[in-house]
Image 1: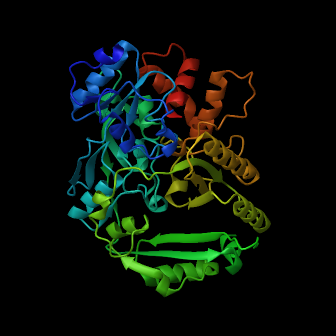
Image 2 (image 1 turned 30 degrees about the vertical axis):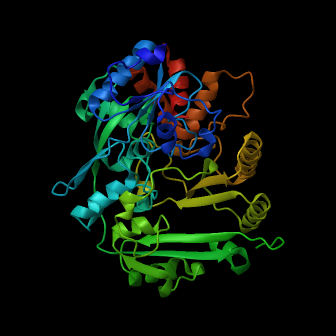
Image 3 (image 1 turned 90 degrees about the horizontal axis):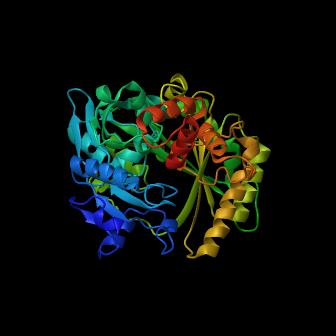
Length: 475
């Protein structure tokens, strides 16, 4: 059998014959939809502990025509780092978890399997005057987070994670290890927001640390629709149910400065000093993940790596024009009816408007007011429950169409949605569908990504097939 010969000679290989196979497979399966018995299983899992494991896996899989799925943290919304519809193996990068901070040069080397929590914690061990713009979940792996763009609560000040990456180490399709100089600027550009797994296996990233104030001010203010939430966001009431809106903010400075700014520019929020907490930046990373004030920073590296056992579906949108108040009321009504949908609105502006859309593959810059993340979650097992809630998720997404970007309706790569093209005419080819997908995620950068793919991908035989191959790996 091919399982018996693939990657022969490597250590740390697990197949279905091993008692620990399912445990290793599901330890980093955060979306329970893909841990069901019927979910596709890999022929093998290679737990990479050194560079030769990565190189050997690539060469062996290439020789035997087996697809590789690369997993660093497991938060992949559609499970595409650990499921496939063709024979595949998983390359687990989570043992690649070191963070080496060089405070003199204000930089750090971060391996792909290092979590964001470990990154923040290691920065804090060296300085309280630096941070890094990335996400709020401490157990997200840097490999996938950075390669899809990497946004967080510092992006209005310092941009995305990819805007602060200055080098990388990558293993290409021939098993060769490259840094920025040897891979070339085109490939270095592509992996910073174009999905690293389409172009190679990222071993590590060199990041530029960004300045933060010794203390920051954070607040979390909740309003329900009976108490003016709609007026603050720019209501309605249905039975005894309501919609609650939470406003979470961080200011690189002290409370006095924040109050002065918000009372002038956003008085509708009604922020008062007792809503605010002044804490070191490192503690704010815990605050954003809903840990209570005073939680030890060691929580960042001790947070459970195993999955929360629930099912979910995530999608995204970009909003370019303010949503009218009456439309907000209609949206609240629908949320009350469907119940399971949550939205997170992430404001743009600042640095995000200053960086050209072609600077990295991530195109969603100037012109966006905010990004919406839709999250539908449920706890019931079974195909019927999955279909019910997936349909709810899709219905809500379609309802939002008048209020978001169009032609194309843009989307964020790290909130992948394999059904984003489900309504395309059946007579469209897979390449045409892939082009439409690619435009939603990459805008005008798709053509350059296809060009880079054509240089580094030895498998696909034409530019049109590379469009499809690029999109099928990313999505």
